[in-house]
Image 1 (tube, rainbow, N blue to C red):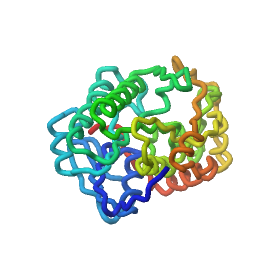
Image 2: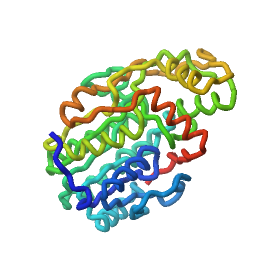
Image 3: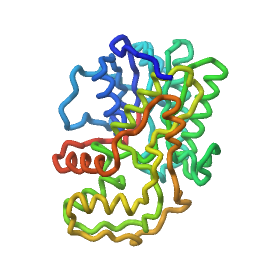
Length: 320
């Protein structure tokens, strides 16, 4: 059950605030009147090209791997609510295990340990649907270093909730897309090819994915933070509807009137490719009242328009 939250009275810390989803989340929190402390990495990120939101967030610069710097940032923000999005490997499934572990797992522990004595109202950690791997369901079965490091971070979050009563919960976004997504990802790369008249080489595209619009994901994260008695829970953020990758790409071709060719099958599947990932949207709706509202065709149209207007510049390769 969601509570009525007066965001104008809330201090909110967002790590990974300059990443793809983080930028949208910060804007929505500012729109609600929250005092937002947006964590930026020491280097590697620049603000989006789109007009800055008003009012501006307070920028904190630190490396999530530096425990002392994390504590200092928490002391400055004194957050009522925390959204933890800082991570590496989102756009690079081949990231090495040592880097994933130091940033995604040890970094999460640094944050949780820094929050342990501060008594925030809610800590929302961000996982990934790829934690489910080949065994979609209650079981977690990661297939690469990125998803394995996220499973480990989730486990530490559960431990801090059970051992220290820290109000931690985890959300797992599914196939997020929308304005500002890094250009090497499927949807923006397909759009770029379509609008430029180029061919688009891809796998056979039989993978079924739950495509969820980024603005809906940000709203889902906020809804999770407002939901009473969901500490320790893990919630999927998706539509609950699976779409084959080839179908999503064909929709882009239809919406843009593309002249290039979709070369399905020109590329092989990656090793240990996951063929089916669809969110349990019913459980999330039952707990939070949140549903993804943007259907794929509408979301793609918005994303296409943003890309063509050059308003979707984003950098999601750095760390905090």
